Amino acid sequence: MTHEELEEAVPLYAAGALDRMERQALEAHLLSGCQSCRSALKEYQSVASLLPFGLSPVQAPRALKSKIMAARNPEHIAVDSLVKESGRPSLEPGEWMNHLFPPLTPARSLSLPWAIGVASVLVISLAGYFVWTYTTRLSEDNLKIQHLEATLQEQSTKIAMLKRDLNFKDRSLADMQVDAQRKANDAIELKSQLMEREVELESTREQLSAAVRGKVPPDEFASLLRRPDATVVSLAASDMAKGASGVLVYNPVTKKIWLYSANLPECPTGTAYQLWAIDQKPVSVGTFHVDVGEMAHLLVKRLPEFEKVRKFAVSLEPAGGRSQPSGPIYLAGQRS
Amino acid sequence: MDTPTRRATSSIDPTLLANIVKGDQQAFGQLYDHSSTLLYTLALRILGSREEADELLQDVYLEVWRKVARYDIGRGTPIAWLITLTRSRAIDRLRARAVRGQNSTMSLDETVSSRVADLGPSPYESQADQELRMAVGTAITGLPPAQQQAIELAYYEGLSHIEIAAKLNQPLGTVKTRIKLGMSKLRESLRRAWEQGELG
Image 1 (tube, rainbow over the protein chains, first blue to last red):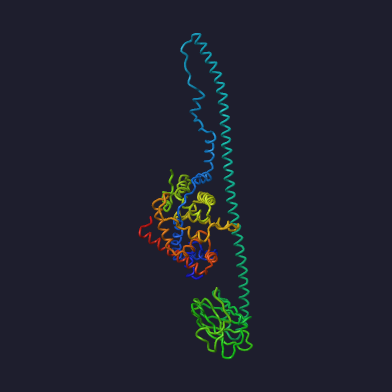
Image 2 (image 1 turned 30 degrees about the horizontal axis):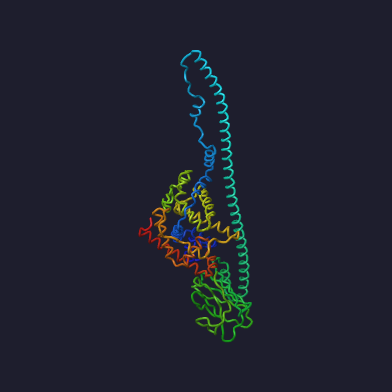
């Protein structure tokens, strides 16, 4: 992608409208340090994050907050449920002391009736004490049961939380596996495409070597094929020239294009093939003639405007060529 | 009665997030109060189901609680981070639903009509949020309908420009231009509103 194309992709990126490959290409560009694209992206992302503010607000259900707070902090549920189940808050330590040791009233006289009365009170108190002790123990046991139930509840909540976390992690893992598989598939596909391209390139090299032998300085052409920045455009045959094909190689240093065409029909008398570079409108690059029995032809021309060109085409024109295409198209292809 | 949304959602203090990183539960509660209405509105818009929006918000806030340390103030405001997280998780759900073969909840007509339904003030919002909603609403309704539709299909339904072009049966270049122009106009109108002091 050119810088202009990347720049144009910035608002689409912010709106979430790029597909994965385009997104990755732009991210790589941003990582390379392009400040103008970075600052444009920041502005467009601010716009994108404002979009939801334009919606009519809908309040979340009231219970949602407590659900979230409880899910985040299970202890809260445990304490709440303990209070609800017991129906009253547990006693403070000071209150327990008051129940166990009620304040004593001193005797006013040691006379017999008083003594009997005191004795009766003592017996009743003693009986009461045993009954109290028994009920207190019962109450303690009940509280212990309640505590155990609360602990059980707390543990259950923790287990539920752990299960939830586990499910969440399972989902994340599954997502990651799918993503990894997708990336692996992409890598295999890219590798296969690369191999195909290498085979094509090798075949092109062989064809070109065969075609240009004796006509082209071997050093210049060999060095072009070794250049990593050379651009290759494949031209496909139209119905007019079934079985024909063409490859166009561009050298960015010499600004020359090398058009190798194979199996084009011979030019009828008074005609020639003409190569067109097309951006907004077709511009003639040059003409060539295919003679009887000529299986392949190589055309070398300077084309400084190559970067602007999107498509190439070869048409059959009157000898000497025309300013605009008038005859049938034999080969055509566009830059990837 | 608790009126959480009367605090400005658009201007959440980043220190709130710094406190949550330290485990401050009260700060987490405040963050929920400040942001839940907007995030719930967004989740509901994307998913079209209250039940799913409920579930999504639970997941999002639990993720925030666990991963709040990842928030980086240099990359945007707290609410922008929360919106991005919510949108991203909601779109994930939408895609998972599509993989399972369930239909999208919104039709094409609904996507256009569901934008700014009401520009009047809402009792649940702060003054600042009301002003922001009206400014954003005005900016969006000021776009040609085709541009609004393309942006909404991308933003709220997670469709790429290729998928939008196929859905609308329009050339790819047309859809790209609509989104680009729409976003650019929104940027200009919101910037103008900001400079004229209509926002914040």
